[in-house]
Amino acid sequence: MNETEQRRSAEQETMRARLREKYMRPHDAAPASTARGLHHTALVSADVERTVRFYQDLLGFPLVELIENRDYPGSSHFFFDIGNGNLLAFFDFPGLDLGPYQEVLGGLHHVAISLELSQWERLRDRLTDAEVEFAEHSEVSMYFRDPDGARIELIADPLGQMYGSRIL
Image 1 (cartoon, one colour):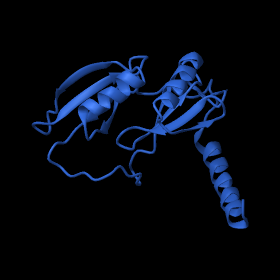
Image 2 (cartoon, rainbow, N blue to C red):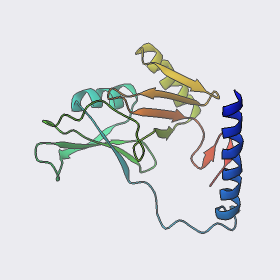
Image 3 (cartoon, rainbow, N blue to C red):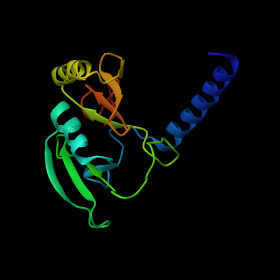
Image 4 (cartoon, rainbow, N blue to C red):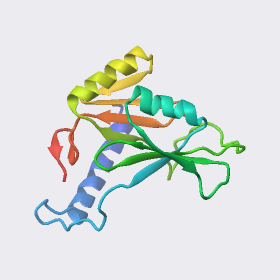
């Protein structure tokens, strides 16, 4: 790291320490969440069939629903089972020129999906065979882009853990 990056890193760690002290509670003292879980996260797809082939055929997430988007006639709303009662959803918007995927403030950075280590290893091999570029981190995490450019993370940490530490 250069001097500017070191200074920025130190400033950010000071800010994180202040926020942890002010807002975080020990696990045994933390209040229960008012939510019961993530129902679905919705992304945008330029091509429904290409998205189905990627998420179902390559990654193994079953397509469980395909309906018309109630907010945009002629558009599809479709869902993949990503386990544990959670869904990954997509909309297509035919006729709209949405442009390429972008990471912007308020936008999506990535979606992290937890897998058993054996499944994670199997999907790493499948991504390699399919020539999907990915970056592997910490031997349990890999990042890649879907056909529309959204960043997906597959992580072998169990739900409620991050980098081997319990957070829930």
